[in-house]
Image 1: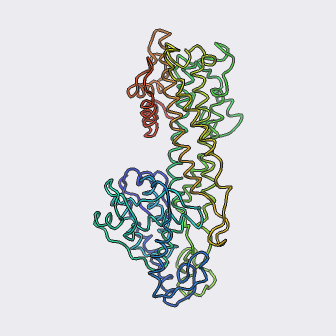
Image 2: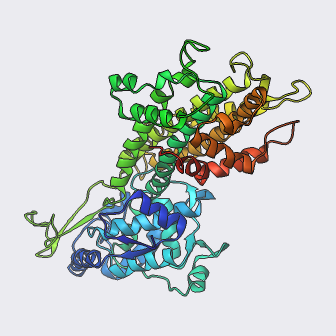
Image 3: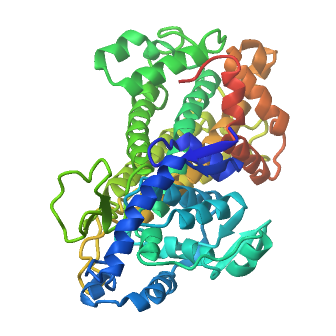
Length: 530
């Protein structure tokens, strides 16, 4: 896909990922320009008639009772952006910032924010030109929108702040000039329209939700490799068991495992070697399935949010679908301006906390599978710590330590942010969502989970090497076809472990294969993983 059309209604998380990560160009739909022009006319009429309306002819937050004259409105908007750009910490990744710009433009394209179409077009042009504002990751309470992060985005649009352009960090005005662009001079309401929304938390959340859907599928694949290394019992994945419970994610995970283990010479049936496996193998569908259902819930919440109007006040032109029959708010025949609270990030905050918990559980059970691989009391005949010469060599001993450390960190990060609140703006904004913190935590959990799964994949492949060696063959000889494809890709990147060597490059290399979905694609070239 070369282009992503922004019409305020049809943006998907796939399209967000394409624009954020693969430079798909964003285009504003013509009908969106018409809607924005209609709501802009209401704002202009309000300013011309000097009506008192929040954020248009007044100050912001606690200063909502301070009336601003028409002559001061341009200064008001510029001051808003400058004063609110108080973010701290490391810059958000470029893909998150690009997603923020895309989502803000799409929210404005719905046509209820009162911004000029030319300003939204300038934001889209900046995105398409590859100018990436420097947006510090910390400083948002998640209500009244993501004020600080979005202000850093808007700073660059106005020729201030800092940005990356072609990999070089420079002043925002310099970056615009290098890209052949000019700064925007904001008019009435436009500063507020650019920063009063949930697009920082939603950008982080959209990419995390998109990646998590792939990670849960990879988790099924990793479990299938481990199951074969441990000569796991396949009966626990019988479809009749899972149909009796009726949880959709569980049924999908069980079906994935059946497909991934079909044709394996390593798998066993109950009673052949053991009556049943431990939970880390036997309950994979139940655990992965619950995370899968949670991720699907989050996915749907975020996909609604990317097409939502999340600023304040909201402009209802008389000609809009929601403009008919509204009470006369004093704006005459053009429309009505209403203050509300759509900027509040609670829907996204709760979803992001849920996402963090769901992904943390994928890592938790993966680490337990690693323990079964390295522990000779649990591995069904594999040598201790998956090394041929234990004592002289430590093998995967500390790799399991690292996995344990990561899942323990995730347990701290999985504590919900959304249950917290702190008053701000002199108690005008007296309940906030902490949604951006929740989203950032979910992203960190996801990054840790990738590394845990990379350690599991490495451990499983090592276990398969040792299992095949004991049988006098190659792992591929008895592996199921999809798992053999994944095994070959991993081994083409990281050789099996003989004597001890420095292992962090191995973990990093497989983590990269996890992150870019190469391992998942290798298995899916043989069998579908739902």
